[in-house]
Every structure is written in structure tokens, then in C-alpha cells.
Amino acid sequence: MAAIPSSTELVIRPVDDDVRPASDWLAQSCESQGVPAPQILRLDLCLNEVLANVIAHGGPQALACPVWLRFEVAGDAKTRQASVTVRDSGAPFDATAAPLRPRPLTLDEAEPGGLGLLMMRKLSDALSYRHDHGRNELTFSVRWDLP
Image 1 (cartoon, rainbow, N blue to C red):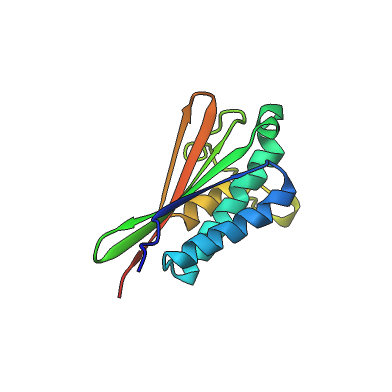
Image 2: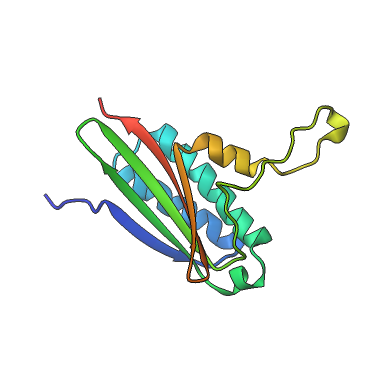
């Protein structure tokens, strides 16, 4: 029986039409590696948030260059970790250090949006960022124990 690769890559355009195919690619990659459904959902929510932010806030350079995605699974006999790295050419933005918007105290103070960073930080078990050669590289990971 052939071994299933522990990593795979996909390159997409920074457009809304490519977000769904990226989600499908992630789900298939996760399923082929035995990632449990709750962790797949967490990764997918983070991926969709990151891609939406690249498209909406990355600027002209982000929209002019492809977005590179890498999925990896690592682990040992007891624990696994699945990670997704998103590399884009947008304006530098460190999602691990950016301040969170204060939560509104009343419904009148509430504005749409602004919860993506909080969501990514809560859904991922690890989140890392670096800016290298003019590109943002954000990696988010989830972990689970094996039975």
C-alpha cells in the first residue's frame, strides 16, 4: 500500500471564486490524513477567514499575485497536528500580534466584522506569522490525540 503524503500544496487566485475550491482541497487533504471532523471544521473556518482578509485588506499587491497554501500533518504515536500555511503578497500583517477590537458593551456600539482575529486565535491551537521576501506567511494548526 502506498504511503499518503503528509503534506500537499495548492496555489489559488486571491478572488472569492477560489475560496470554495480551497476549502474543498483542505477537506480532502484532511480526510486523506485522518484528521477528525471537528479539527477539519476549525481549520476550514480559519482558512476562510484568512483568505477573506487577504482579498479584502491585502491591497493591490495581494490581488496581483497568487496565494500559496500548504497543508501538513505531523505527530507521533499519541498526538497529531494538522497545519495550514497561507502565503500571500499583501501588505505586511501579523495576525498573531495585531490588537483585537474592543468588544462592544451595548448593541448600539456593535459593528459588523472585526471578530476574525479573535476567532482564529480561539480556533487554532498554534498560530505563527512571519514576513519574508515581501510575503506574509501565516500558519495555523490544530491538534488531537489518537485513540
